[in-house]
Amino acid sequence: MIDLYTVATSNGQRASILLEEFGLPYTVHKVNLPGGDHLKPEFLAINPNGMGPVIVDRDGPGGKPLTVFECGAIALYLADKTGKLMPADLAGRAEVYKWLSVVIANLAPAFAGQYFTKISAKEKVQSAIDIFEGRAMRFLKVLDQRLGEVPYLAGASMTIADLVAYPSATTSVQRLPGGIPGLTHLQRWVASMGARPGVQKGMAVSS
Ligand SMILES: N[C@@H](CCC(=O)N[C@@H](CS)C(=O)NCC(=O)O)C(=O)O
Image (cartoon, rainbow, N blue to C red; front, side, top):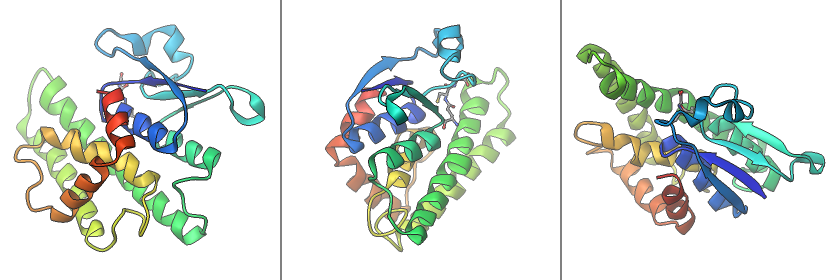
């Protein structure tokens, strides 16, 4: 059994749709960010960064509990644990690493910057908001271009890269003025990913 400590954001959604699509049983623990749950000692004990989501795999390697934080690490750990949603060949795996990194290291931080400058900041600086929104749109266009070439981010089959990307392309994009008109390949992929029962359940778990 896995304990999922989740947050009602794109990052929490990444973890819960991964667990659903891997078909792993898990118990949900909701972390209340406005209430400061993530800064309490018991949460910092499982993620010293004080950020959700976190999973605690009670049946980790050697039958011992193992804690994993950071969405990219959670996705890779679960793929390794199950042997699913990751190609067997090195070239295919490299595609997963690339597109997973585009989302985790570029798109998600751009949306985080947009959130901080547009919503959290007491003083709104339009030029800073424009930088983050421009970067988010730039990376979304890269995903759209890629999805015009192949059905899924890493190629012919759905992988963890798609599951990690999906919440950014649905939840986070709602904060972009005007949404993503014209990104037709991305929209096609969003519709097909969103039709999956596991994705729907996982999105609901962390909303
Ligand atoms: N890079 C982290 C980002 C996680 C993250 O930003 N979590 C946010 C919620 S969306 C959080 O817990 N923030 C609390 C804080 O920054 O204090 C990941 O991929 O898991």
